[in-house]
Length: 475
Image (cartoon, rainbow, N blue to C red; front, side, top):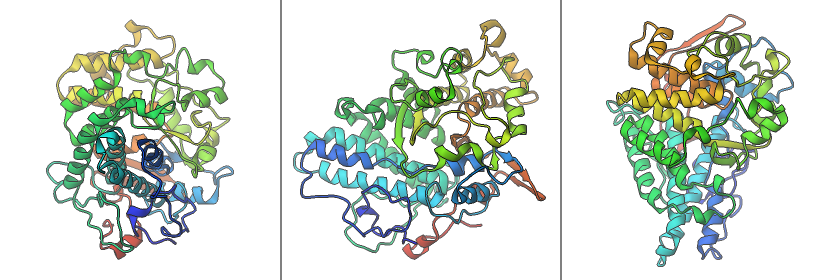
């Protein structure tokens, strides 16, 4: 098993998802030939995490239940990750789709970003400003995902004392290094510094004919909206989310489940869902080592009869029926056709819309929240009728009674967001952010509640980091 965090700065090649190669086995870059902005741009294609969090994040969330089977044709390693995540055990597997593999892929991306920044800060730095902007956004995003999954959620009252994750800003020149976790507050400050410095430098024209695989201005604002939602700076969430939409109506940018997706065969739905030509997709990444797209429908711990009924058969706040269709011959195979190839949406329009809607509740801009919710409803409810299906404050409060108004409105936002991103793992991020309790039950006699503040909400760091001077998360 490879030693984690050895010379993170030199790991800029594509991450070996096999998990067995030494970090320094090969020289991952050719430093003697990188002299132009175009070459730095090529290097930056490795500055995005190419690992997937979907398998373990989905299994940790309340989107799953014990379907009572052994997994239908599932890869044994994936079965182990699915099982241990559902039971809130520290995942032992280090291969593709595991927390350790995702940790590695994020630090590989950070290393590539740091190397790119080294070139960008040379004597002709002005010519590399667009590449510098992309590198800073890449570094900020990867660190954000790490601190979100491996540290406590940001809380301004405790963040200065909550252990963070190492924030790497330089290319390492030594093999062995000691790394400091810092704290969540310091990590957030560094993320924000990279974000606010990098965003004005982004130039979309630098990305040629593949902008959806890079941090465009739109993607940078979408990430900023997510970051500030976690940081609880709600005015900035609204500012950045609105910048994502620009002069376009969000209704023209989110997925139209009623008129488009519901008319397609599953194979075509999959192709459209991850297509770079789909307006709803803001930032895409390749996950070449992931086995999740080929197996996600067959896990033992996934969406089954009870979750399906609770989310798609029972009444919902709209009083209508969702146009989002679940496929599969039975609970063992329930799935939403989203994964035609190993491409994963990292940021998309529906999340931006829902983040803005939630932020506006906190800002008491209730009409703005209702407007965004009803935009989503217009594209996701069959036989949509504004008078029948649009939500109002009284309608939301009646459905979520006895919650107070703000809590009820946020619950409505979260429910529609949850429906949108089934089997993509994003529900877990909201569970972390809001400390939402989760109950997992199964056989034989398995019953656990992940209460607010439970230490198992934090993914465990790879055990090898102890040798690098870091303490593991408490258990």
